[in-house]
Image 1: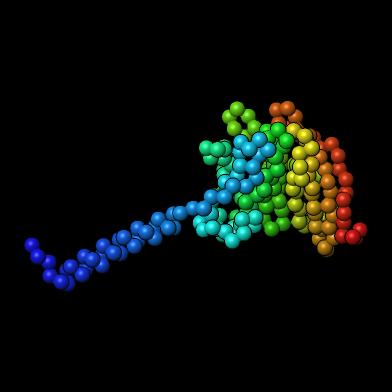
Image 2: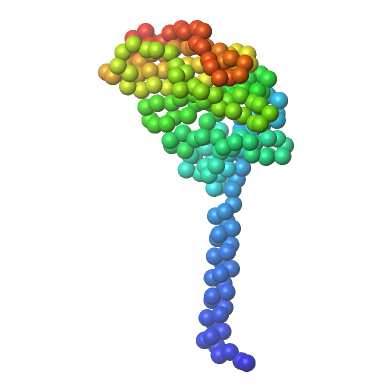
Length: 200
């Protein structure tokens, strides 16, 4: 059966459209995976998937990030999903020297960030209870940011808490938290004011 020229042109156009659409779909599905925050023993790292290659690998545009995961190396088996800040930014992990503890800060909004702590076990990494991982501050606090600094040793974490009071004054405190062997509880063992707006 012979096809007339009009029908033939329509078939060619439809075929080209389907091929082009398929190519576009594949291009949109393409991800660029970057590794960051490697553990000291090199067995774990954070895999950040991006919709296109970022112009700055050290400061990735949150709009490009499609997923953030902790993976085992070298297989890149997913260990857990890593939470992102409200803006989509990926956190930087702070590892203990033995690679069995990790901590990171996540901003849940423009006025607050909290520190999350995980401990390694046979089943993976378990999240610890850190709802009150902060020091008490007197005054009318408007903004509060708690970030991990470093692990002094396994289970002992140094953190910084920065607060901004209503009216514009601010202050920062350095403190240490010690987690028990099971990681179920912690206690704050030291606290030191490091700076304030009035002291600068």
